[in-house]
Image 1 (cartoon, rainbow, N blue to C red):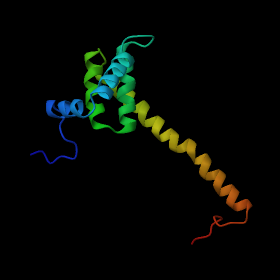
Image 2 (cartoon, rainbow, N blue to C red):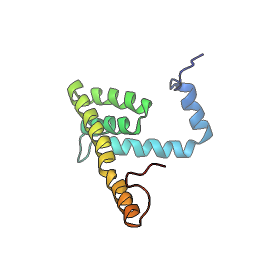
Image 3 (cartoon, rainbow, N blue to C red):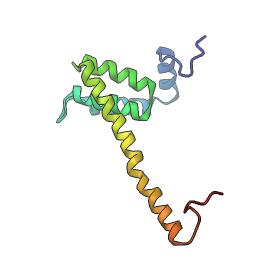
Image 4 (spheres, helix red, strand yellow):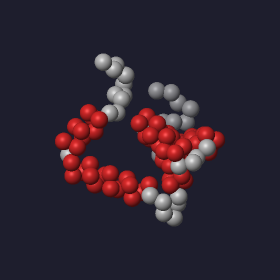
Length: 121
């Protein structure tokens, strides 16, 4: 018995997904195949984007699967790591950019004579 937080994917899980909801599964697979097909962006680039996004969404299955797919599509280990660093910067950048909301709220509270100007509660 596997006691890990994330069960290993396998044929039993895949069969159960299909048994429980075959139509959405088929639609999802068709959508995925279309998204990752070569188009204006080549498959390798799409897989590198997927690796980066998987690190932001923090899906361990996606990280492993898309890292493997990126390698199969010819991505180098350096390209994969750079994609991961882009994801890290974007995630950190979002926290930094959203500080504008906190600053705006602090300014509103201060203008309204509310708490937040060095006061502790």
